[in-house]
Length: 310
Image (cartoon, rainbow, N blue to C red; front, side, top):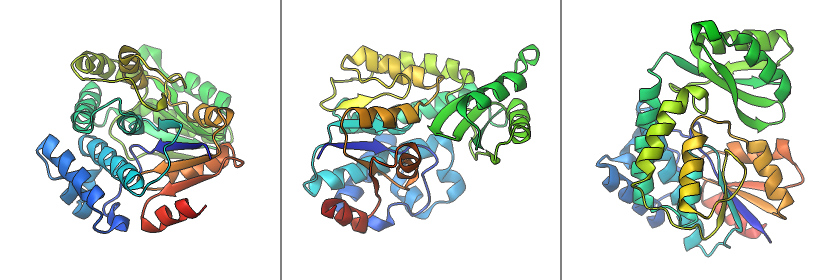
């Protein structure tokens, strides 16, 4: 069976998210490695919180990367089959590159901490916002954004995550995002939900962060991936390290094309998708994008046993 693994990103974190793995050595060792790389006890933060500290971007990004890779290492240690394709949603792309052997794990942990700091520095807390628009098609959301942006005031709002048909995330300046939420409801959106984030990820406001990240990536070792990784920004896999650096930098200020990514997995002959990391967000999106492509979430011992038995 041709497997693809997908890795969740920011938004799937929760205090206690690793409890389902009990005392698994692979999990503890992964968090020890991550904690040593940062000089911060990530395990205590993930196990005990507080939630507001875990939800700060600079902590969420390394914590989620460690959680994704912990689940991946459990799969490997259990004799799980090697996937033929990998992808990750936003931050999850870094986990995919670690799983592919393109990034060293400790390097990646430090890299996503740098990424988070660059993102927050680009747009001070309170200036940017994100919101999920449910029940409008992609073009309708793009039109809403075009109407609600205010070039004269320097305010942007853009469609940034195409998560599933009828679920698009917008991001930009807070006032413009609020206008877009109101207009989307007028245009027939079922819901327009503000997201609890401090950074307008994947919007053009992240260009300064992308430039910083690209410069920083020049000093990070990247190898040719042993497993192909589909990137968010272009739904392509790249073998050249410089092309991977460019894709990671561009990802910060361009949309996450998740619907196209899942459809590309199906087109490549993938028969099953395994979401590797906390939560079940991507498995849920998979059902809405293409319910003929089975997806399961690898979140605890029970789901691991079920994945082997299916």
